[in-house]
Image 1 (cartoon, rainbow, N blue to C red):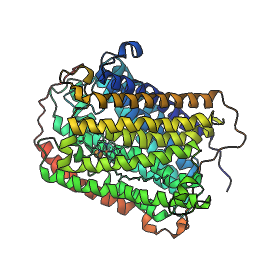
Image 2: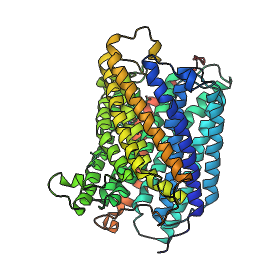
Image 3: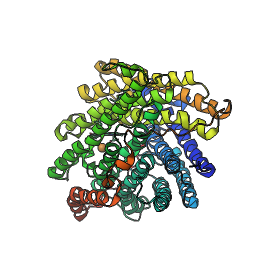
Image 4: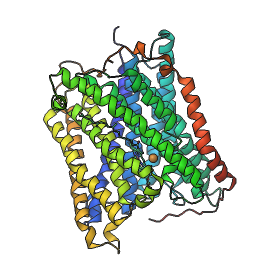
Length: 548
Ligand code: HAS
Ligand code: CU
């Protein structure tokens, strides 16, 4: 079949990714300033003039990296993957354009109070910390814009299904659309929190708010958001990376099963962020612990299936023996090595996650630097390094230019790993051994102990190396877009074949209704009673605080 012309779709993707990378650049700027502050080196005045406090910087770091970079990159990437995988142009491009405009306007509206120090509430914006209302309005627009773009993708898939009755949805499009569906259900909690509680409170229409209810609605979205970040990487690990490694998808049914399990299990686990919150009965926390263990299962399936798929590639490239195939993988391709190293990192991030999920064990590490170590393995490496790997073929594809320097890209990837290992290890240890608090301007803390110093220095070294890696990444991106040679051969999205034809995959693994029903039932069972209780006893008495 002839490839469609995806000029509009690719332009739209490029805009999303351009904004995402702008956010990443500004957001990561604060990372090294934070770790250096922790060892008493204060560079804010020199490198971030105009920033009023550590906490304003930390808010920018979290919001720009964890919320803005991710959402823009993901929506752009999923648009690209859906249309290319289906070989179907956007059914209603105006919907996707409208969604993008909403997201972009939302970003500007959020950015103003952030930069004016009127929204230094950290990226979880827990009340009673209170931001200027435009911060909440802007974030809402970003989320609503992503929903609108999601609908644009559903119409496109629906159209494909009409033209291809009875055929299995191509895996990449399937995973992409499922990610959007999961996100839309998951983000209802955030929508309720912001629209019902925070905006009226920030406008002064109500005097107080209920922090516990707000936190519970927040984490209804806040946990599954981590899978909204992870699943696009999984789309690439399952659907593309085997091709890049010269292998095949080991099992199409297992790949789809993993995605369905994420749809069903991502949401009813959010209370694992609230083990320490009073006012929620332990029964519900224990249930969420069990369901959290369940949601690790699709990641274990992924570990098995993706490694098997890569093994097929390594063996096809001449690898032999139990481990000999690993060395034969295309490690010199930075797009591959970034994603393979992201996977290895996820083994450790995943183990940490299971520790956190264990109700009583979490009480030891909750709100300490351990958690910062955890999410710099999962989000800041597994996900971000995967996205970087993807961008090493996607940006050449979108710009029509060759990757500016493959050798620099290889260095960038390894430098990231060399930075994140000491960074993350030291944060885990500081949290576990000394219960050092997270989100704290430690350099000025009167209780700082000399015993903590060696690990804090290690963290700072890791943080600075990570920064160097990010800066190198931006040199490569800018070099590619503005200075590289025009592509001689067009770049294509890598699409891995499956060992057995997807048409052999059972039909129940390509049917939405049963999975959506189970997903809703589990949400009602796990969140219905505790939320009903919190709403019945809602106490709108906390006044807003602006601390910094
Ligand atoms: Fe988490 C806190 C539990 C995964 C992100 N997490 C956070 C926070 C963030 C975050 C940002 O239960 C902090 C939130 C805040 O600011 O307060 N997390 C888990 C669990 C998992 C998990 C059970 N987290 C993630 C992912 C994230 C992320 C993914 C971002 C993308 N997390 C928690 C809990 C807390 C928490 C508690 C709250 C703690 C507290 O006290 O506040 C699981 O999904 C992990 C399952 C993963 C695995 C690993 C499978 C391995 C694979 C790789 C295989 C490939 C190989 C490579 C081996 C079981 C798939 C082979 C390669 C070759 C080349 C051969
Ligand atoms: Cu979580």
